[in-house]
Image 1 (spheres, helix red, strand yellow):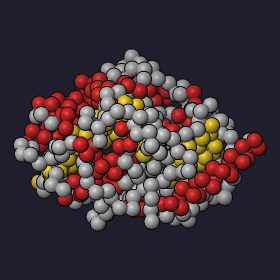
Image 2: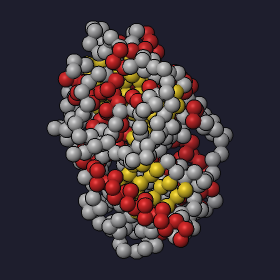
Image 3: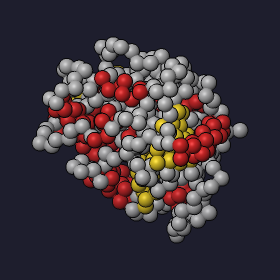
Image 4: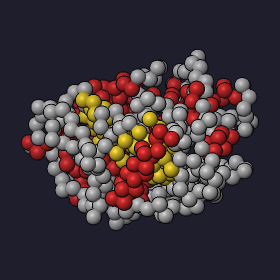
Length: 494
């Protein structure tokens, strides 16, 4: 039987005086806003040096901020399926960006629809890229095939295709606000709003296109501190996923290691950040629409990112690896009947925890045999609420995007161990990694070769094996890593 992943030593949060969710008399609405490739520190309330996100900060101030929120696979489609199902990718089966969510697999939208909710999906679905047809679990459907464009994307709106002229973030917010205002009856509602931003090719809205023109970023210091890293990290530098590569079209000549190429990198980073300004505007509009329609305080409002993104750390762009910029994402929740203002959750929460959390808050029966667990005890501050002290990460090598090996790793509160199985046999290229996160949060010094850490490494290996076994994952259910191709692809990447 598949169970929620925990270890024997678990932390208990402090007690808060809070009502039980079941004491409500009115069924809560649910709004889940999901961004694409937004890492955890791209919020004003996370202390960003210049990005201002007042509307997102308001959600955090009036609700909860999850300070240690992670995804179990840092890739769009697998992570999105985990949010919906409460399962690891090895079980739900969406292990790449070309596989759709299985029609027969349960999810929290399906459960809420069956319970009488009016349900809607609006925006980027990003599972089963070639198909824009409505998916099970949703009464209203407004999405598209593929990645979509920042301007003038063609949508399938309940079976009719229509180009929504204008900026993607703004137009899907228009649709979402209209749908919310149209919900007049007593039936509760559930809406998922899937943003394209801040996914490549980073294209800020016209009003924000030049807002950061005077800011200089430069390569981060960790971009060049690769001495203790496995060889594949250095090999990646001149590829689509490295800082010397084409960086998604922002660099005309590549590979480019010249000093002038740093300006291209600055434009790349600042354009990424600028797209989030429109997301913040969107969140503000959703908030005001809920307030205007009298639904705000009876709505569970959740904001999260589907995976992180490298902005030059360890010489990388993209995601997929198990380093912190790739696996850490933002998550905010607002729901006054349960969540006290300014709540901060320190425990390690995962994308697989969203589905069971939503269903418990809505008073629905839990999904069966899932890996995630409800965060409601953390939000209540129950003294007897035990929580995970470790979790494992999985990613499978992709031939189309061969810059990241197979990854299997385990993270605890203070340590991270990563191995790269099914490689080419090279100890240097697929050398494991071990980091002391408390003393080295930037993951600069790989301790895998330190004799003092031998016992710890063996314990981390055993912990990884144990956690994988609980989900039915093995070290054999992954492709052979064929290495990085010598030629860069002509097409843009996902």
